[in-house]
Length: 205
Image 1 (tube, rainbow, N blue to C red):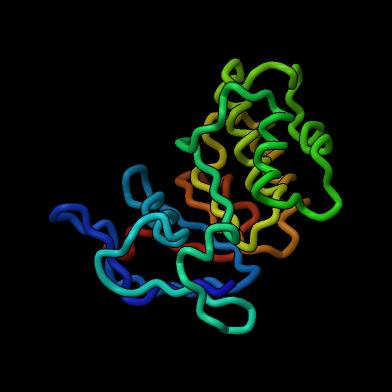
Image 2: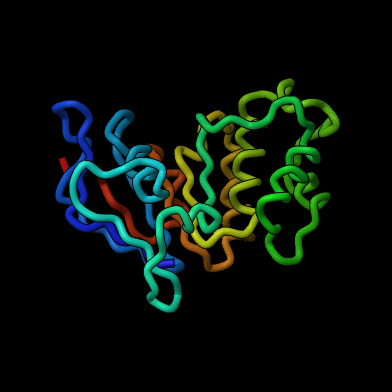
């Protein structure tokens, strides 16, 4: 899927989060969005995903045949993981995976129990509400990367993760990205091990 932002800008009240931003995201791109906390990285990810509207400019989506896609038809093509996204905490891990599987197919070759093993979480029969913040973050990343989606958006992926968790995330990306588009928003350079171009949102203030 091709995503374009054309002369894009987003304003809250009288403050511009960003403006005059032109961005073309091609299939297989690996882009990092950098900037300090509160600079608008998460807002830009939500704009790219179609969750949030622009104040000015245009946003377009095209499939592999250069046919324009309506915004209501793109959501099954995009995965989004962020610390502020909620899980269903009354599920255990396998129940969460099975529930998610009702809406998206797994990456080819993977089964539900493979994801349980990939999580490296012990006591997976426990409810997610008993998990630590780091364990919950692993579940969110697992769901984003191991189910089918053309575009994967990760907002501050190393949040609540220790060094081992960051290495686990990078290994998961390396193993299961499979040529798909990856966009990571972060203020931590260690999150950018798997990207090949970087956009600093402060350049569009």
